[in-house]
Amino acid sequence: MSAETYVRPVGVHPPLDYPEYRSSLLRAPKQPLVRLPHGPTETTGPLLGAERVTTADADLTTRHAGEPLGERIIVTGRVMDSDGRPVPDTLVEIWQANASGRYAHHVDDHPAPLDPNFDGAGRCMTDSQGRYRFITIKPGAYPWRNHLNAWRPAHIHFSLFGTAFTQRLVTQMYFPGDPLFAQDPIFNSIPDAGARQRLISRFDLETTEPDWALGFQWDIVLRGRDATAFESEEAK
Amino acid sequence: MTRPAGLTPSQTVGPFLAIGLPWPDGPDVVPPGTPGTIVISGLVLDGAGERVPDALVETWQAAPDGGFGRDTGFRGFGRSATDAEGRWHVTTLRPGRVPAPGGGLQAPHLDVSVFARGLLDRVVTRIYLPDEDAANAEDPVLASVTDPVRRATLIARPGDTSAQFRFDIQLQGTAGGTETTFFDV
Image (tube, rainbow over all chains, first blue to last red; front, side, top):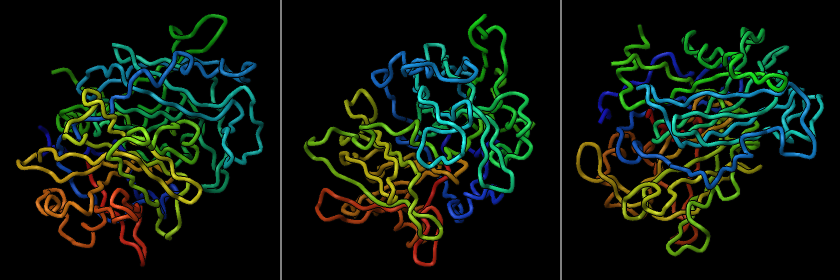
């Protein structure tokens, strides 16, 4: 068991205390974290089955009376652990804004139109090779109040379980070439520039379906069992 | 050895997690009416003492016999978005004792992840039960938190009945509220 040797990967995950992201000011813990040795509760995790998911849940464009507005896209990739093993049969949950940059949520007051044909939630199980695939529309950028003239780059929220409590991950997938990266404190909260790039999907002509939808590839890497070995690679 | 792929970094759940993450049966680790049910409930609070209405609390625990996962027939997993008043709850069974990494047994506990706008990564804590004094006294994780005030933040308070417990999560300390002890996993 790696309980005594695990070191949190340097530079990969954002610090909790990151004042540039204003919402963290009153919510980030100030006390040092206490090392939790990994026992059975940490090395196991919820194995939530396919009974929670239907095939239709992976297509965000066919759930309502009409089709949502926006660029139809396919988002697909593999879920792996940092030892390079695929993570099969694991639940992937996503949520996102509509093509206008508006969330179907009562708190979102951005003056952009809601789309009655888009709720923005999807889920699927990875297949035996760890692959996931969603059909959706490209989310719009939107303003927020973090700083003067702050805009979030277009993104899709992802939630993953893996097979152990230690692998639980919630993150965001971005799109290539977004001009808003440089001013976004959430994207830039990741200390390591290379790690930041790993949140950006890749446009892929192979995934693109002719006369129908643009394709984006994005692989997700959860912690493996030997996080220390990974750590030394990361540090280069 | 193949070169391992780089880890995918965490990002905040943001303010709109309610679109994608809550499930109708999320707080029901066991179906309502299951014999031996306990309810653990509480608030999520920020560093101004304000209630946090856009957090998600997830719990993971052993079955009463100390086993984990599907083979036990026990989901073990609870998920509760906070309501407009910052309240969360799970309905579950008492976790069994499981081995400690260094030998011996751990006291009954639930591992907890908290997600919210303002948290760039999840924060992790544990819930221990207040009527497990003997087991708590020999638990190595509790013992590793040497400050008794901080250690006490990990132990739920008794509720109105022996099947109810209260566990508030103070994300950041205030003058009147000790910050919950969070773990590096």
